[in-house]
Amino acid sequence: MKNWDLDYKVIDMHNHMGLEYCLYYPEHDADGMVKAMDESGIELIVSAPCEDLFDGSGKREQITDAMKRYPDRIRGYYSVNPLLGVDINEIERAFKENPGYVGLKLLPDYHRTNLNGEVYEPVFRFANQHKMLVLSHTWGISMNGESCNSADKIADILEKYPDITFLMGHSIQGQVEEAIEIANTFKGAYLDLCDTCRLNGVVEKMVKKAGSEKVIFGTDAPMQGYHFQMGAVIGARISKEEKRNILRDNALGILRRAGCPNC
Amino acid sequence: MRLFDCNACFGNEMINHECVNHENFIVLEKVELAKTAKELLEYMEAMEIAKSLVWHKAQYELDATAGNQKLLSEIKGFEERLKPSWTILPDITDEQYSPERLFPEMKKHGVKALRAFPVQDRYLLNGVTMGEQLSYISQQRIPLFLSPQSGFEFIYEVLKEFPDLTVILVNIGWWPSARLIYPLLSRYQNVYFETGDFSMMHGYEEVCNKFGSERLLFGTNFPTNTMAGSIYALMKARITQEQREHIAHENLERILSEVRL
Ligand SMILES: [Zn+2]
Image 1 (tube, helix red, strand yellow):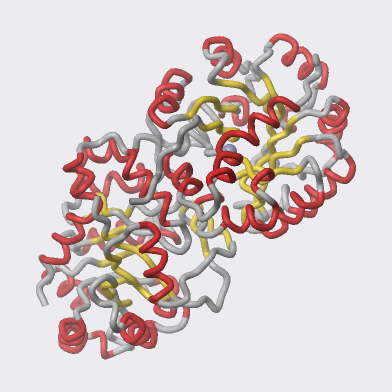
Image 2 (image 1 turned 45 degrees about the horizontal axis):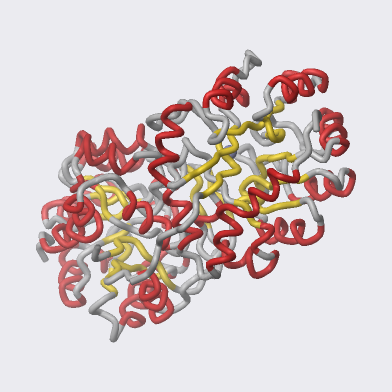
């Protein structure tokens, strides 16, 4: 019988919270998230709630509350929406007040803003200065047929800002080969498995071509459950150690190394 | 847990592989293929899948008729574990798909399931185009596998006209589609859906509670998706062992056993 058991807990580096993008799914608040994590063997999530990405109120209460209530289970990304303007002082203040924040989250396709455009520039300069972690959504081509976060734009940013730890959310789906090349070229670039891990043979290809140390586990929960994507990694034809790197150890390393404005 | 995959595909690809993110949003990405039936069996072996209801890529991207024949010839010798499903076309152009010709052929070759790709094959799946065929499929309880990759509307339309049709929704897309799938489950007793893309948080639990475990069929949506994802999701779902067995193989076995040819 094939062994599907893990003797360690998993860390999810690409996570949300609350209702997202007009989809239906049950249990999406902090309590529901932690319950689902307990059921699925997830120790820690790094989350960017949907209200921070799609709601202009700028309150960010869902994530700051969740980080306070579950400091060992939930960390946060500070989401930057360029349509609302970028205020670096405000980001600095938020990190100071909320030690649970570990990085920045960008969503260029949905905000219809080019990753290497002017608006993001102060954000990257700031992140680079503090050697921060940035999770950006990346697809080769978006629903509108645009390419706000395609491989060329990512490479452009990483050339200019080499001290950022850059998680390529979804590993530039549609351009996964290019994402692997970027992971091999830039020290700070990582492949995020969110959604993309389900595609047949992709986990194996990434591990073979970029090394398991460059592959990070993420799920988009609560928009998705945890099990399907965990299964995609656990069932992959890679070694036990490589699976552990992806599901846990790489994330721990990134979280340990990631800088923040206060440290 | 004995596994009978309701949706696996093999065969080399001549065009880019289309991965459905959600209906109407297709990502073109390279995936690893099972080029032959034997390669597919090797994947199944590794994942401990007992049987698969399969189709050949040529049935979609080359031609239905040529693809259907290719399927039969390539699964020869493996029929115990690989069960064939054919692509159907409207008989107004392709006469070999008329009920009097198609169904005896299906019987002869042990084909108990059909797939339709109306967008790809350039027709509308409705009574005007193929009323007699669809009535027969419905009466004989032949499961018709449909993917909503170009949208759910045509599925709603065909079921409005043929409410007793046995429809298996496959390749449902990665984003949660509950608002599109639940109404069909609620209205039509013979609608089912495949789990090869089903990753919704607490989705198994919810569907089993609302509609019963009879409405889900284990599938892998291979090779778009790795087989491991839907296996692990089913294995870990917080449902009873009885419900898990329904989904893993019993529902599909029952549907195929009820086909009258
Ligand atoms: Zn996401």
